[in-house]
Length: 82
Image (cartoon, rainbow, N blue to C red; front, side):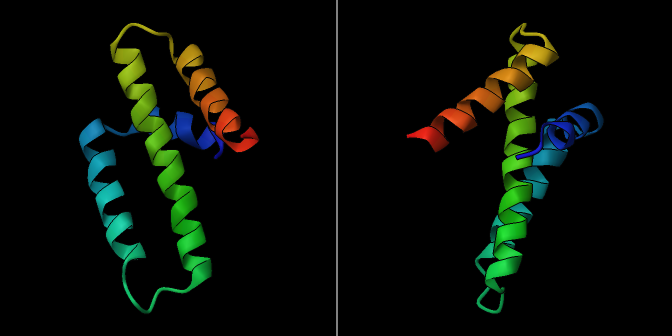
């Protein structure tokens, strides 16, 4: 998870674009010939895209971009600590 990447994706991509990209990456990870390294890279991209989608949802509900980014970061860090 990289907050600058999530911010960039949020600012420059529509929800629809992010959802389509997410679907493609998830399908890519299911291919038999995909290496573990490639799955790891795709997983990082998926995390960043999901973060951007959450930021879009939060901003649409009235939260500021900065607070939405911080909330997503805290949620991820909180799940790692468990």
